[in-house]
Image (cartoon, rainbow, N blue to C red; front, side, top):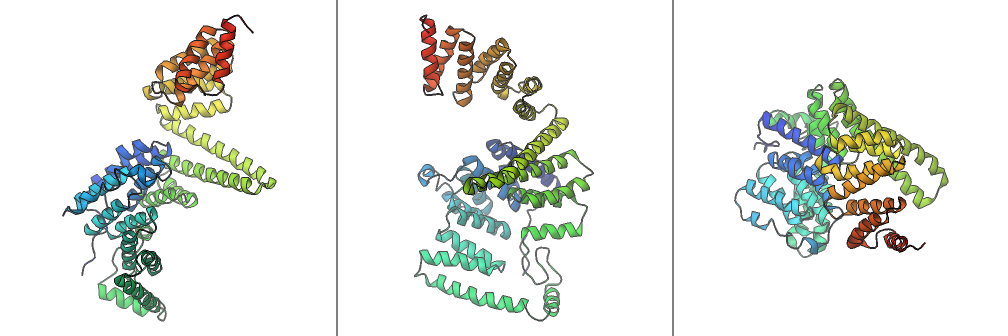
Length: 465
């Protein structure tokens, strides 16, 4: 019997297009543009290449960051069964699309993951199907259907320990299921047989016989006939063609999404070398190094807060300084190679402002404000910089323009109104202070010390002290 396909039958041109979309989607994730990454980049990648495990894992990781912490079931009550219609579909492609739509609405929808896995299995993408089943178990570890599907998929790749774990959970929920008990017993037997085969002699005769019986070694199997993991398949491709950068980049992206920044850095160093210092590869490497330092900073902070060990203060401060230096290096690199990118300019301005380089920061914010979506935020930041260098008139003008430019009544709007009212009071322009203070009061009277500020304004306008 021939092996099922392990890759989507898509053209090289389409694959290249999807890789570009995926790379940009990753960049949007780094900038916390989770909605944008989902809509424009990552969803088309998953739909365009259902067999690509990295696409699916990144797509799911982005959704979870977008939604934040796991929502209560009630929150998703209206969409929890949104993939049910797909079950009736005879075409796996239609079932897959419906499952992806449901996952986008709720990245903890067990039924949607199971439908997605079933669809992938029907299309011949067994390895990625397993990832959907694993995602279902992650969403609801004790879900019977999820554990049943995952156990059978793990058994197919001879991961007997994993399959046994899933079946143990299944049996806890359905202890009277005779088929499950029988299958669980078979797993123990198959595990024992598998171990004995692997341990036979030096294994050479068994490997040769297995390879000869198959007429050679399949692309997705080792010499023992064991299904290779996704990582092992990519590593095999690297050995076959060590100059192909795409395989190193694939592993780097995979480990980056797993927050294994050491491994990501290792493969990105190779990407930089193989690409002859290509700016895009250098940017990816700098970002991985930055994330690695940030993870270390957060770990030291958590450890200090738990133990209150004063010996951790120095390494924390040193690592934090390294992180800030690396972050600055990354932003400078991005601006050098993307000089018109407003997001990078704004980020650089914020770093300069933090370093109290206010004049330099103003220049960056002025460039960034050309992006209409960032105009209000930039005007507010420019106003703060002018206030820091005692240019109060210019600061006031920018604050007032920021209030007009920021249309949504969120935190940025409140901040702009407050800073305008506060500065106007300091400039003894009490009518202006009252105007902006009262506008803020209509949104959030409890904002900072607004109540006290309005009382002081009233006293000044009444001629009191």
